[in-house]
Image 1 (cartoon, rainbow, N blue to C red):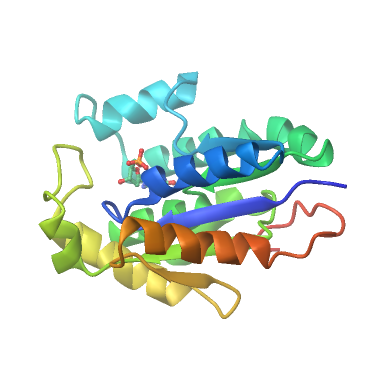
Image 2: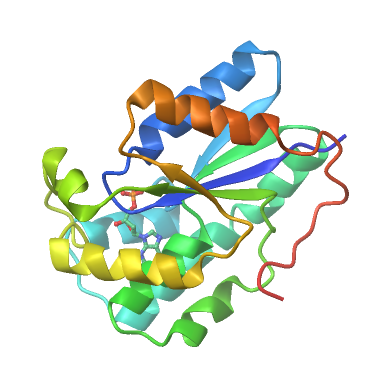
Length: 204
Ligand code: DGP
């Protein structure tokens, strides 16, 4: 039986990466083959270019960097497909939804932003970690990276709200770490244990 593809989305500072790591550890301890993927994956060639852009050491046209973020996702698809088909569950820390919302928040056309990611693997579930901007800022504020600014993050939040549909699971990320973790585990437990064929038809 194939593994589940579980996508975790949210604005910066919502606790995504911490929770993703804990979920992967728990699932592995429960004896379930599980792997974490994170986008952007800063270790690949495209990822290194993205990293340098985010750290503000290089400038790039907004469209060009969007295509690079998308390429960074595409280059992981065959590896992800074979893992899922071999029964490994994958937790993904950010996916194409972040891609569209960040670039649209910068002013690029929403439909244009979706196009390069059309045909990616379709997740079995998307969890959105919801946190108000005030709460996010209380958690130590934003750092030095290019997108870590209040005004842009507010726009990203609005774009996420436009994009989400009734299939998304909204997680209240203002709760305690343990409560958030329990809510996310409950979503994972509720997934169909026999998820049917893998689909590579995002947004088709
Ligand atoms: P992280 O390593 O999770 O902090 O993500 C780095 C930043 O990149 C974060 O602010 C969100 C942003 N981001 C992720 N994917 C995309 C994308 O496809 N396009 C754009 N423009 N930004 C993205």
